[in-house]
Length: 373
Image (cartoon, rainbow, N blue to C red; front, top):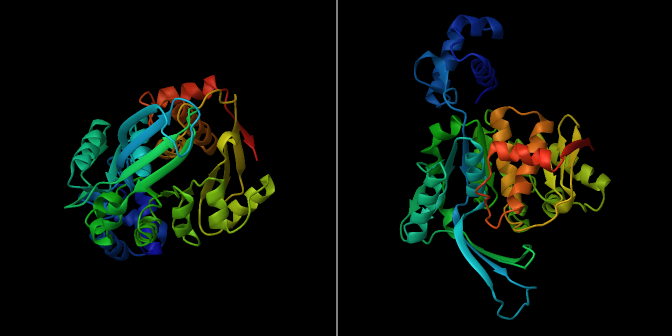
């Protein structure tokens, strides 16, 4: 997209029915030039139908691109003993970072659509069925014949803290740029695109480069191994949500103090981010944006962690919902932090009780407040 096309898109966001003559007057160009730019935007899929209606004008929705897999979770009844058989509980559910983000957002009331790869197996059927039940649009799915759907296995101590996890997400590596091009209209019409770093590196770069100018792109690094893909690769990303260790890897420096944390975040902001939120575990989340605004959320101590696995996914789901609702940075941090608290209070990775109202209730109940950092 050219700079002039971007300017026209911004005007049409304010008024999708803006006449060509007025667009020309505001931009100081001829009406015929406006017509050429509008025709190009239509060919590229940024404008749909007659009247220069933007692709996203009808519905504000999020598109997730990333993992959707079967989660097998084991939790020990007592303190976990390694290299031994531990009595416990085993459950199966549909997970995957991007799927979890989309389901959390959908349960909060945000229209969510998912682009992922599943195998043509019974796990793939369950993933699609569970997504549709949760209100996630699955029309963007790619089905890989003869392949096994993604599977994630995690082992937890009696207190809910994860001790070890294994993931087999090889099928996601089959997602191609050509397939994403076939979903261009879906992507260009989104109000938010969210990705996880389990995607092939070329996919991460393609999405950020192709859509980052006009659609806010949110990225979750997922793990320290995946985070290395993002070193020097945040151009085109709007919102980034790593934890402390992932921040160290991507920023290339030790984060062992509040001052070091801010310095690391400033380094990453300079790569083109609009904002970064670093998860600090029990210490909450640190926020910094390109205006220099820094903040953290404080509140009542978390009394019990039932299952910490889904906290980050719920947090990003809250970020997505907040973006679609146009919440302020302060409201966004309060809402997302409360969503994460709801997640860790339930045995399921995704708290089935999560909703926008229940999240706001948690803000009040936990006495969450924003403090400038």
